Amino acid sequence: MPSVYDEYYGTGFVNVNEILWSFEHATPYPFTVTYGEISCGYNPTFGSEVYFMPKGFTDESYIGIPLNQAAVDSLKLSGMSSNVPYSIKKDADLNAAIEVGLSLCDEKQKYLKDNI
Image (tube, rainbow, N blue to C red; front, side, top):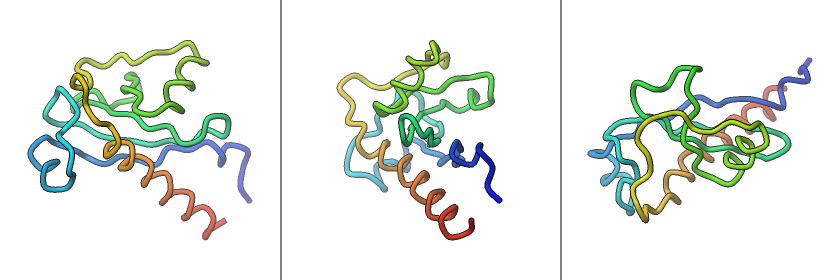
């Protein structure tokens, strides 16, 4: 039986790096650090929240860089902000990075639908 907490979830992460990005995406690598993780979590108020975490700053004491509006709104409402070093490159196209994160959430929602 699902609990009330099942509607809030994190989906894990996808490792990304500057070298492989160009082979997998048509847009330039958008982050100022060579390695990191893109993650997605679901919040029933805001929807799917996508974040970037630089390598070495991925444990629970760090808040990633919000990549989509849902993540920005969630952090704003909670009074929190990103506390990781590094950032997004100036004028970077984040569409591919957001799609990576949203696909994680889509996979989790499908899994929950099929298994609950």
